[in-house]
Amino acid sequence: MDKETSRNLIMDNYLNPKNRNKSHVGYEKINTRNESCIDNIDIYIKWQDDIIEDITFSGEACAISIASTSIMIKNLIGKTKEEALTYIKEFYKMTDGNPYNQEILKDASCFEEVSHQGNRKVCANLPLKGMEKAILE
Image (cartoon, rainbow, N blue to C red; front, side, top):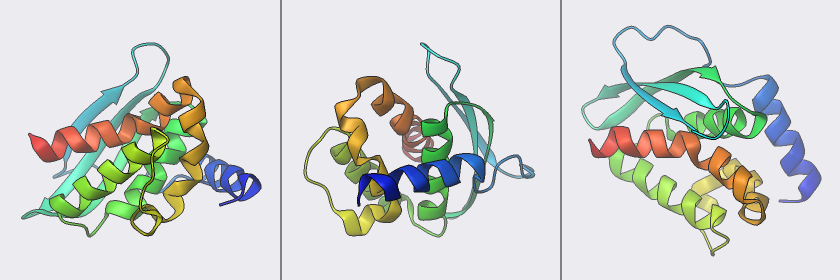
């Protein structure tokens, strides 16, 4: 994905995030935060057996964290826990600068450049760390 398309996708998901501040009744809550900045996101997950039925979120964070949360939500709703863990693993590969499966990540590949910016890597990975914790606990 070219840099301009990536920037536009990140900004669109920051300004118009999916499932932000929706009702959280009946959802499991996971908090994920960055100790070195303002990023503090509550992720709410609704499970049906081991399938992610819905995800919503609330909180304050930078553009990268909000956009990453929004894109993650779009890509994980309807996935099994195993599929979600595969997605998370591929995302970590990408943000570490390693080869990854773009077909699995879809539009999340817009974060490929954060592998060159350590502080942005933390921001992009923040919601995925929360989802991983929710799945593994």
